[in-house]
View 1 (spheres, rainbow, N blue to C red):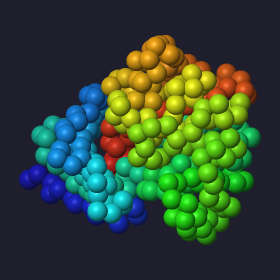
View 2: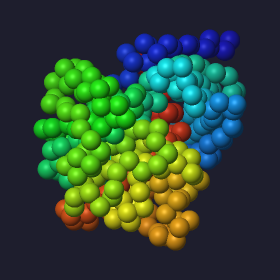
View 3: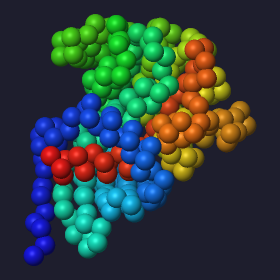
Length: 312
């Protein structure tokens, strides 16, 4: 008899995913499993008021198969409802669903955990100031997860509304017991050692000339060719690492726009995450390098997070 499908709620997922362990699992997946997984560039389907994304992944060696379905609303009633996500872990032999779960928190945490992997390899060991652009779910996840890989002494947060940003900073500061201050874009860009852009902005958030030598950036908000969170100056100044070449070259407006303008070439991307964590190519080469990790999201991250939940 086939095994009955298990369904997990958002609360089940929150209880089952440990951030520290997920960082390690994602790093190991990109180092050891990435060479034998099939990850098609995700399907984008335009909806009346949003986008439908389909993200499958198959690990031939690990005999694992899964798929995430995501709707990103352009004009949600509430900001926290912008993304709706569902994940299915399947039996690769039969195609039967083994596990079905709400995947909003899974998406939040696996994205922040992947940024943490990149930060562990690319950020300076003496990084002390974390700057986060955004006050939504991804900003919250990055504020919780990034301190697991660097000992930050100060955190700066920059949002669209100064009042809401102050409230957000106070709430997260109490929760994490870290000094978190709301600030403007110029200060956040100029004074942070590690910057995470977690916004829905389609235009640059700051002037790339503000970045000081040695800064590391994680860009996670933009995932369409016409949208970007940083300007061409930022990209030109940085050693760029991507989660996957195929995904970045199909979706990452942060990179595609300066490419189309003739400001950088394809070779400006120094490596992908697999090459970085397996030491095949170097990310940071000296303390003064500005390093940048551009993530559009990779279905392997979702698969290994779902496997963690299946095993728990």
